[in-house]
Image 1 (spheres, rainbow, N blue to C red):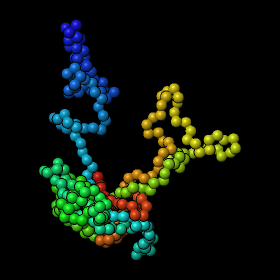
Image 2 (cartoon, rainbow, N blue to C red):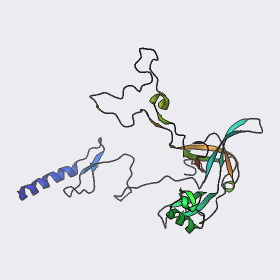
Image 3 (cartoon, rainbow, N blue to C red):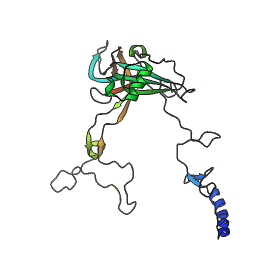
Image 4 (tube, one colour):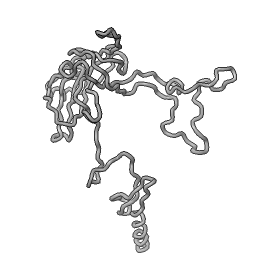
Length: 276
């Protein structure tokens, strides 16, 4: 029986190794733990492999530069010299925006600057975070986040970032924050679906309607637009024009995500082909 099993193993292994179907996105892998030979494995679209290596090549999103953090104070309007009324958002900058860590490709494998914001009492954050801030020589901060860069940063540990030195009127910035949560909503409100008749005999005033056939495919496809949680998602408003900037506030044209007091991340606008 052992001889028969070994003979069948040798006959099946080459056939599995040669299997390659381009239309299905299947090709023979370099190695496999099954039968010790190459087997057909699906290839994910959009995943690139490094040249001459079997490891996957992972590329992180880079920022156009180091930015700052602030809180949404509200919206107002300003008038230009030409008499135009422009709606603007006021972003208040509190204590913080201090460099707590500088990473380089030589020490950490990538270039980044970690910025801390919103000074708080030490008992409001964890002890590891308190120790991390103390190592950088800064007060305890609530929010810590990195800005990934393509080049080695020139920032120093404990450096205070001032918005007036980083942005000027006319610059374009990307503002990221959490949108206003609207709770559980139906498809009519969330996606703008058309409603049914509102007459007495109608059985579907604001109902969703059909979600697919019963027999084929017999299931609901992933990503189907249905009633679900609306809002409370991370949103980035791109290329907002800076109208005025001071050390304690940044005024940008247009609206920014979230409600008053919402945490915002202000960074130089990413323009493909120019700064990223």
